[in-house]
Length: 267
Image 1 (cartoon, helix red, strand yellow):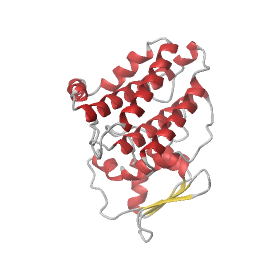
Image 2 (cartoon, rainbow, N blue to C red):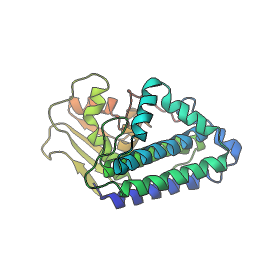
Image 3 (cartoon, helix red, strand yellow):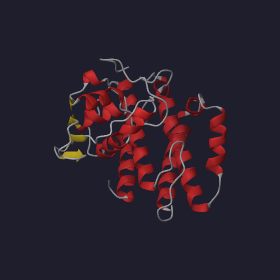
Image 4 (tube, one colour):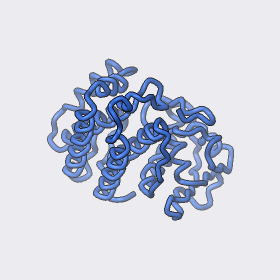
């Protein structure tokens, strides 16, 4: 993957593109429902703002040795089923200008904190700890995915960019995680994934001679692994039964198995 500065630049560009989509909306439009059940546009931005803040808190702890994020984890464990939704709902109650500024401040603080993490120190998270580059990749993935929910709610088609490489990368790297959260055995063999980037370049992962293969547009793969589209609505091809099964359970985000979308379902 790209170096940390490039990833943070891509995260900033992805966030700015999403901000350009939501900032002109009238306050009433922020209450528009999105495909995530019970979440409005305000919930989506509130979630991004809160998660960027929390990631920045953890990155700061990695530098200072403080335990602020560990204390937050203890609180999260006590409300494991509602912690994320509660944070999004609380943020969604803020006046729109204040929420927008909170999101801007949180992502700026996160970028500064990640750049200051020393050496190969890992940043604690709700799942396994991550190096700063992996954290930036995860934040880029989430920003793009929740931005897709907002775009779907508004009926807007976003122009894909090669920033999707980071989303695709985390989608490939989380293959075994998708099996684990469903208590299924992960295939022993590696898969080959070949994707056509928005720019026309070919991105690939895994051994060239792998028997289990996935190919198609990078955009479609990213929509699949973030569960923003049903596999039936995507132009992805699987070779081999294990690869075909993976396309039905792929999940790039942390947490329990997602419900995904029904065929043809956008909102």
